[in-house]
Length: 93
Image 1 (cartoon, rainbow, N blue to C red):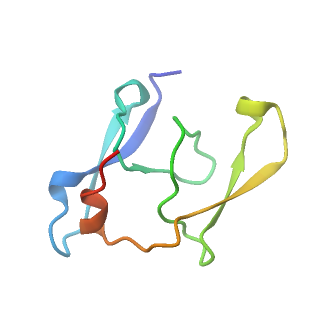
Image 2: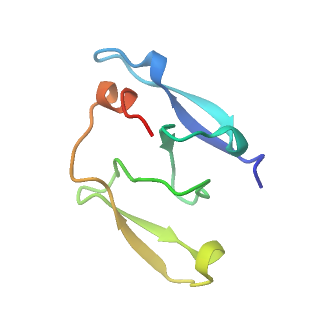
């Protein structure tokens, strides 16, 4: 399970308006403060705070069957604050 891969923001790549770079990390090497990019139908490696969503209202739908056995999707909402790439690079866990 901990050998699965996640995309993590390379904070050293974020300066000004430059396009952020994402690196791949095994779940076992994730640390508090890592910014993880999730995509539709990906498994979530840990408890995460949702910073952004592709949906305009900030909602994401989470399948929690592996956590609580329930099969219905749960609505979760991104933070009300909008973050720039540079601001994301300064978030500490």
